[in-house]
Image (cartoon, rainbow, N blue to C red):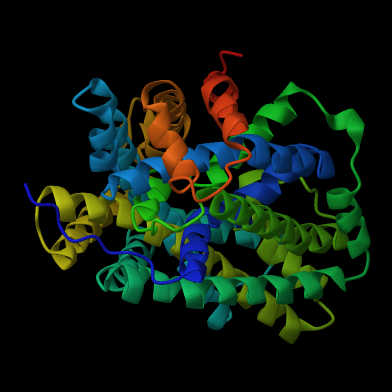
Length: 453
């Protein structure tokens, strides 16, 4: 069967920005700050950076090798290397994981759009109880979250349908610099607040007494979560890499960008939080409940500036969500495009409609409609659990085993060194990490998430 002509990124900058956009998302701007707050601040950040460098990057390179070698969607790339063995199942599970995450991730992304709208029309004001009520009422609303979920998926569709260079790469070159500019503006505004330096100290001055096994496992889990490992995104994007792309350099650059954005997100949030006396361990509610009130209190003397910063913050969240949603959407779009032999627009439309339905049910399960539960939990929470705590560790673990123990050593070496044109100084270290260290680390994450250890 003749393979469809393969698209590719048009520049090295496009490769880095698009793939970094996949990694940089709500995991960095939303999840990283509250995980940092709950796990000791600077100590967590140091361990997190170490996990990205020693574990996240080797896993990323593994997916790059599979994707570029296969020059196809994630499922087909695994299948081409598996040679008819059951290992091909990993690719299909990766695509399924990315597809399911797209559905419920779009719900959270839609909340960001609602908060932008609410900021624009002046609805985000009041005491802490007001913001808690506002969020709970939004989550339980039968119309607004579903509408915003569909809107952000349609925006994603309009980007994806234009292809790799004219859609994904062009959008990434616009969205990623804009995201950085917004982030830096809010960081500067937050760090100028009275008492903000306590928040900076919390992030940058380690308290070594906070180190324990839970902090290590939390940092390890966050590194995999924020780098988009095992979702099919990295493998799919790597299939658009040219033969001259240095996989190690690309992975390191993306890992550095990921860490920088995560730390800047902390510098955006904690100085403002400390300025008004908000606890740094507020948890998942930090973004949608705590922070709107924080910005309002912190800039009480300058309400116009507070309004502006709050609006910019939710625009930042929406951009971060969109860059990741594009990569998640592309995983399934590439799969349907190549496996069902339909046009790219048709494949993108199938994914958009399907994920809109999944997103609608996930949203409605949060309180708008009774009975949308599975095994005693809401569909939204069930999708979050099954993908984040089951599928992702399984796919990540098996991918490392696949690359480290099954794929022929020559193929791995050729891809790592660009067929001998690169020195490959770290190749043996990479193989050691992928064979032994990464699988054990992922196994610990998996067992810890299931509360076995």
